[in-house]
Image 1 (cartoon, rainbow, N blue to C red):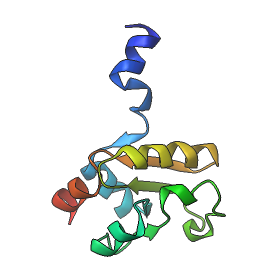
Image 2 (cartoon, rainbow, N blue to C red):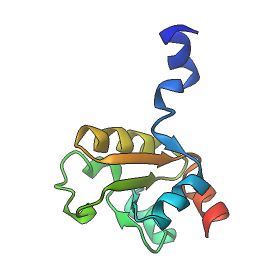
Image 3 (tube, helix red, strand yellow):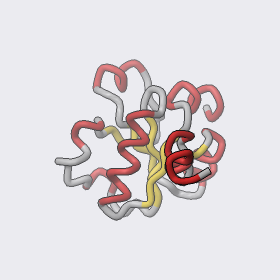
Length: 111
């Protein structure tokens, strides 16, 4: 397929995305849940285990709220912002993955 074909099909991020079921398994094994939605989205509902750091604050935040997290499972509304956050966290040394489909999928399949 070549690199361009892989880029267009999204294959380059396949290692950063997991299904809601895979995410729940990671959390059950001790992963930290990170919600990167905005405050108004968080207030409408969130996972009770989640740490809240909006995507716009990931780059500037000291990320102390993540503590000694070995694995971070990130969700947003639909999976776009969480993928960006997972990339940024990887660059900062975290083992992070994004929940494919976002919070609604997480809520429907894991709670």
